[in-house]
Image 1 (cartoon, chains in turn yellow, orange):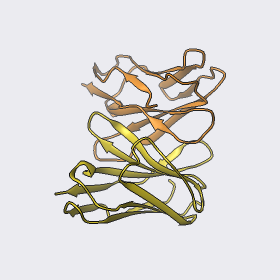
Image 2 (tube, chains in turn blue, brown):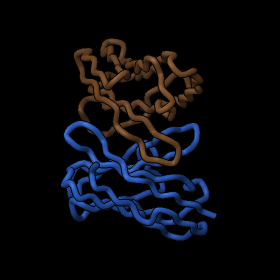
Image 3 (cartoon, chains in turn green, blue):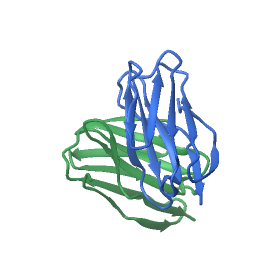
Image 4 (cartoon, one colour):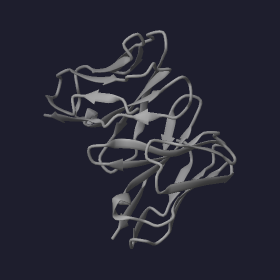
Length: 110
Length: 110
């Protein structure tokens, strides 16, 4: 298994507060992804990165920003959390072919 | 640009077969298939590249019709362990932004 660690694994926060989720990998994979998973919608791409400081938007990027200052870390930030951002967030890295997923971070915005 | 999966859900008895379909409105570079157990991260099953190459994984196989931008996942002689949600992921033009369908929930009963 690819060494992918997400933190925090669970978080409850209030509307309007900033939140940062961290994804850490030990495989030196170039590509990293953030997805959100909601019932009925499957996995939707938020942002992805193709190298240090190289990122691009996915299909549901509004309200989210990302940063990648090191190969191993990919951060997802909600500048001002809203209830619609309550979800399970998965980080993934791209190996030679397939994606490897982290265990997920469950975020609840009250 | 999310691919469309069908059916949304299927219930089988052990030993029965199932087919899950995935289609896209865009020309596809590759199709991935993943399975997710409840409360866990998605796990890679197989990847199919342009050229209609069919790849197998035990009793699970898949096909890719690049002309129709469609892929199908075939589960034969299903086992209880096959239960879970299946996702297809698609890449357009080798861009590495992997988009997933909404998923197909498969339940295998004794």
